[in-house]
Image (tube, rainbow, N blue to C red; front, side, top):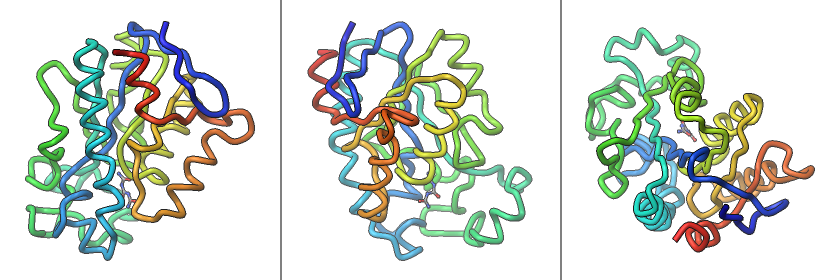
Length: 217
Ligand code: TIU
């Protein structure tokens, strides 16, 4: 079984029980001129994850391991968007450069071309920050006998953290890849990763993608 150099301890993963989770690598968050940038965020902080994540995906797919993508967004009538979320995100559902912001079916809501899902990969649409709330993710993992998750995507302190914390409580072992997760805020990226592996791995492990690729190829 592959064992990856990680913090706070090496992480062992098995092909039959591990999935790669690619969280919210959507145009709305990552494209210059998109929703994320329109909020004043520096999308370059997220875009640096694209290259290592594409390399990881290529190696992961070549080795035949399971991939699950997620997308944050809402139904066109916003019936699945809590008013409290909309009050603090008034652009949700409004017309943006890439279509209605964070609305399913719009160009901006979909995954960036570089990381587009391929046939056979699950795409989980989620209305919240966490990937378990109001989705079929738990069922998908259970059906496939998945007990470990390699977690990538954006943003580190929001959707990645929420998902990893939820997964940890549900009994999954999570390895977060430092170079394949991104935050608009460098400080949050740094401490966000520290929080995961602190206290003996309080809710997960952290490693570099190169260490993982080395073990699965
Ligand atoms: N996917 C995700 O993290 N959604 C966010 O809204 N993140 C922010 O950092 N805003």
